[in-house]
Length: 353
Image 1: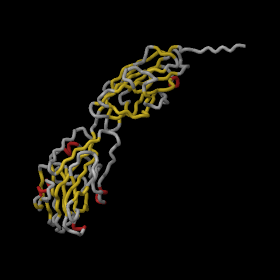
Image 2 (image 1 turned 45 degrees about the vertical axis):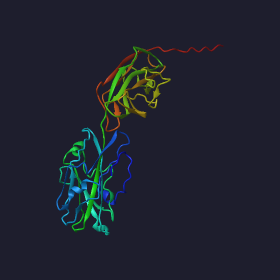
Image 3 (image 1 turned 60 degrees about the vertical axis):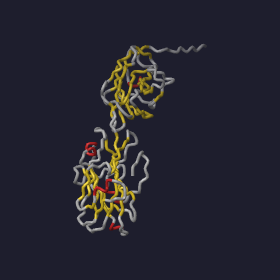
Image 4 (image 1 turned 135 degrees about the horizontal axis):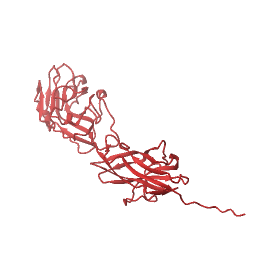
């Protein structure tokens, strides 16, 4: 029952699992899992169960139940070590066992999770069916199952976190449990730090295409996805005199904006409205612990008013990352300073007669 990677074939879930609250795991984020088996559990108890500790090992020696009082067997203290600041995406359970009874109604059992070591957390999965005539895996829940409750890393890391099984009815028909696996699916919360550098020159000519701000982005660990940024215009220049606000990746890593070789990662069509340009990146950027450099650039109208000033501010909270990762406000807000508009090159047209 041990799984070593993210690919694993399991038996189809029964209708009983429909009662679980399921949540889709976002496509992006540092998706991870920790898997434990009953062999990792250091506490196994079960009133009216025969040899309950036999569930600890997948060896054909069984924990069995053949009573009428529907007592739980509690398998707990798995030793999870999920990072504290993680987001839990679900708890997956598989159990292995069988029943010698050929009638389905005599092979039905329930499963639940516990946070405090005894009480059901959220809701149990009911009316699961043990295999017959030999033991096999039963997929109790899927990777995205929340069991009708919420989960934190602390819940799963607790010595009181456990998996429980019981007979579904009050009729005595023997059920045999050989082993079980519980897998916690989670994502780490990684932080993006922005290191800004003002790039605005003291003066800039009408019609210029130039970098106003440089942003170096890196994570504290793993990866995070940067998706959007809001640029605020400063100075006296009218919104319409900045004909485009763009975001470029420094493709060759030389720290200098080069429109011919750097990579445009926004639409190139963003402009200012009321002094603000909300830019969704056309290509979401994967940020790692190795810094990546980006340029905020302006394209100015050839008719921009000479003597006006223009610059940019990147406010705290101006950059957006895909949940659950975040962009830290360290080093923000960042201001490029203002450039003063100068007369650009004019073309004289001569029309002879």
